[in-house]
Length: 119
Image (cartoon, rainbow, N blue to C red; front, side, top):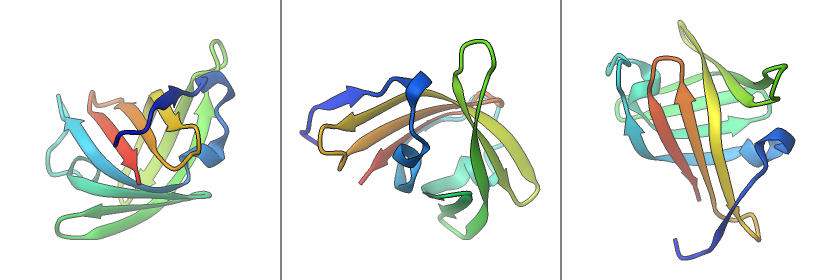
């Protein structure tokens, strides 16, 4: 990707910036169970209220929403898939000026860090 990416102010993050098909570009598991659905995902599809995780062996559906902490208004993703419910802090979102390319960094409660890219 050669396009210049700009940081999005996370306190003013529009939820529609998160919608779409994301590819898992990088992942650090830390304490996360490597067999969990989230740890094995290769693609993530975020539609309004609907989540679809694609892994090597299977696809799973679930739901997601954006929540904010009261003090600093930091955005979190609340994620529910199968028997797994978790939160992920959105640590960075970068987009190209035309909105065609994006990079999303998430930090999960388990310590897992994931970088997602579009397209």
